[in-house]
Image (cartoon, rainbow, N blue to C red; front, side):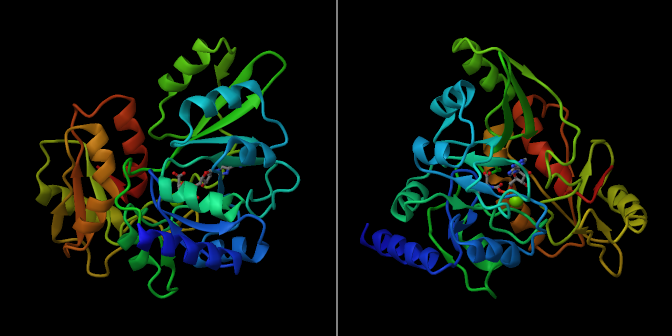
Length: 338
Ligand code: TXA
Ligand code: MG
């Protein structure tokens, strides 16, 4: 108890001096800075080596804070916040003019969420201002689900990390664009996560709010959604044919990987110099909640075992909304899907 109080104070001070810190949340760890210090926001991008076109999520500890950073807080936002906050739902809403456009990558909207983690909420309360935080990994790399993941990722930069234990959920929040119209609310899921479309539908229907889901294909509305992301340091290969032997999969991957470009949408594609010969297998729990919780951690562990590549066998039984959220990440982390 003593220790965490001391650490919280230290984190608060670092933030006030314009620094960044590792922030535990229920989804993944964040790399946080105060939203009112532009040089600190810039530091997030520089530390992560993240391009400025990819906007940051603003983390709040109260509804009042959320309202302050939005130009319009409508009835649907209120209902969704009451149902899912604190929790893994990021709402994309009209930006208040006071929000630095570096955070929103020049967009007129801002992504906001209230994390469900006592330490994160305590720190935001202590700071008295929302904290902008992307996941605490180098751009395009595997997200962190423990304090040690963050320490290892930013060893060189010597980032101070608040240790809040292992993340409960294990993948990033659901990102939902909420557009209040005259009598209907238009919604788009920009990134899948723990909060499912059916959860959102249930809550809005119960509250008597008229809504419709629309697909958005406009890249400008949903930046940061590259084909690849979350990539481990050795290629991850997803195998969809359960009958394919690992040896055949590696042979096939070995020839296909040479055809890939060196970089796809600013993300470097790793191609071992001497080709792919040895492999490790990534295995996840049968329960989708557990599989999601352990995914990033296991991916890091298996990558560290020293094979040329990682194979993941996709099982036919892994179906439904929960698995889809996990496969959104897994497929993006993969160099190839066979
Ligand atoms: O669970 C999470 O959301 C974690 C923890 C730390 O809170 N954060 C996280 O941040 O995943 P990051 O930066 O890795 O992903 C944020 C993504 C952006 O890449 C973008 O796709 C979307 O959220 N986003 C943020 N603001 C947006 C906006 N104004 N419009 C559209 N998408 C936005
Ligand atoms: Mg991220």
